[in-house]
Amino acid sequence: MAVKLNRKALTHARKLIEGGKVERDVRDDWSEHSPSSDDENTFIDKHGFADFAEWHLGRDDEKSDGTKGSVSFPFGDFKKVHRCAVISLEGRAAQYGHDDIRDAAKKLLELIDSD
Image 1 (spheres, rainbow, N blue to C red):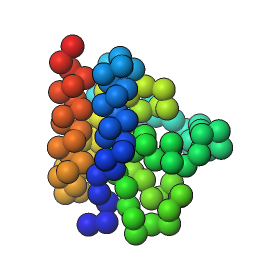
Image 2: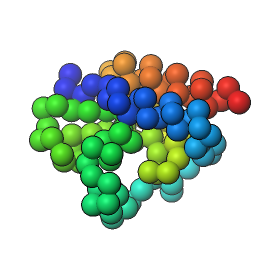
Image 3: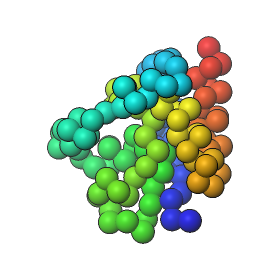
Image 4: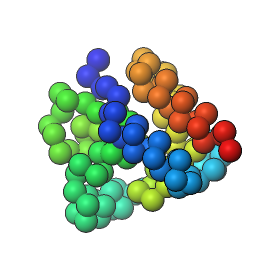
């Protein structure tokens, strides 16, 4: 499998959660809360692709580096971790057999819900 856990993104997500930068929304909110393509492009232009990649738990080294196709499983809106995004990505990771990403998402949910 080409998609692997992006450990830098996992560390970033943990720091955000521990710092209280969490949107405790519900499962189906991610379709409304997820950044638009224009939001993503603006973020990349302002902060660079490396920072953009840190908002995605999946990384595909077989795709061209520095492209949106090389990252997957987003968990936030570039300001906060969204609980709904983590729930969504956990399900998708499980569906496609990305066990390391699924397990990381479960741990993030536990951290979010521990408060």
